Image 1 (tube, one colour):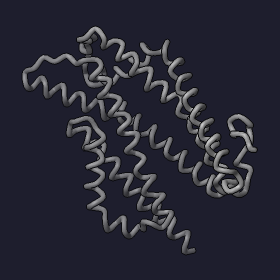
Image 2 (cartoon, helix red, strand yellow; image 1 turned 90 degrees about the horizontal axis):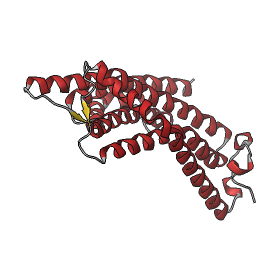
Image 3 (cartoon, helix red, strand yellow; image 1 turned 60 degrees about the vertical axis):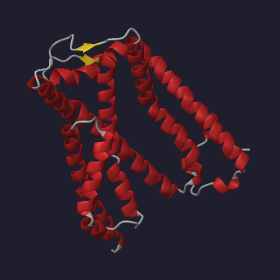
Length: 260
């Protein structure tokens, strides 16, 4: 019986063809169980690492407020006695997941890769690398520019209404985390489009002809993923539309290579 790769240390990337058919179903269940245990252990370890870093992480998440022009250190407040614990657990939970994500992906790769051929593994690794780069790029764009501008717009709107507002800390963290994750996930859309193009399901001509419908869909995705303000939705839609045009060029280049 082949042991789970995490336990046995075997390298499925060295196989030229997948070995899915050579293993009985029970062994696949055992491998899946080991992968789930590995993922849970990594997540718990990530949470433990985040425990002493909570104040530092909170400081990092508060920086967009400074970039939005807020200098009052009391702008973020806690209104319920249990909110401090909620904030602590929210930061630890998300921070642990972010730290554990690379190790969880390694476990998933060890589980899935034995069923893939060598060329398929290379494509999956390439796509995974692009996904990571786009995810980080989306988060950085939101963190450094989009969310601070969105916060500035909302704060100025409150001032125009004549409202002196303080923000609940837990609500602010939900706003920030939702925005950051939304941008990171939305930036995965071009990967899906490009993969469908490489598979021949979509062509560059179809992508061009359906451009108007695609823009509507991308704006709808932005509206669903972003916090409820029009500024953030528009600012997420713009890079998605640009990436859609890049996808058309990438799919067209792949079509030219196939026909040469």
